[in-house]
Image 1 (cartoon, one colour):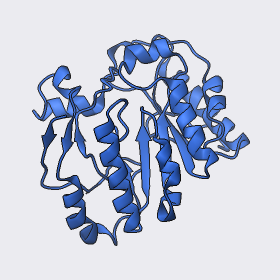
Image 2: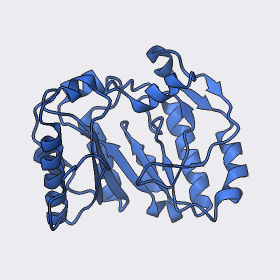
Image 3: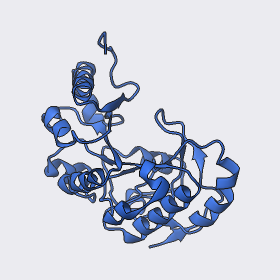
Image 4: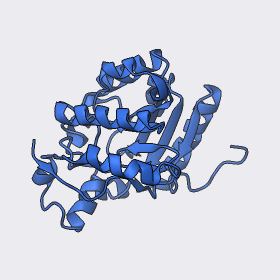
Length: 261
């Protein structure tokens, strides 16, 4: 795998449910086609030129050295560090990425900094052997469907949905906090599916984040987008309350909030 170097790694995120963040890889082999917001931004900034280039990830080779310098600088300001918003820390079938992610999580935890982690890959079982502060980490998967034909079209090189759920179930069984990001959730003209079945498949998690699909030309053609996401947001809230699961509805997803939610 190719490598690059950076001048900095940790930064304060502007995402509504995040604190500090880091991205220790440039690009992502999953090649998501929703389209991928991270790819669009990197292309707009001239960091990558093509989709093919984006799908050939490059590891930030000096990540650990940067953390050694930056952790003392930001430690008193950090509530937690999120991995990752513009790449995937456990990129499917990319062991070099996963190995570096484990080292980064260990380094943050040894400095009493907890992590939130999100992947479309599979969590290594060895995470369950971590001790100490890592018990406060939160491990999450992206899950917007249970249909692998849909995954093959929109997340072509990611792990299949069942394997993602299984790896999260394993960590949950070991006492770790787990969560699911149901974003970007597709409109019915992309796939017709039962949201409740997806929710039931991950009813063991501690938190669910739900968000709409943006930047998709085809999705924007769906006539009842506002009503669709309002209805589904209410269903997520009702399900989470019933099952005592924390939830967060992304800004702009639920336009008209239902009273007493």
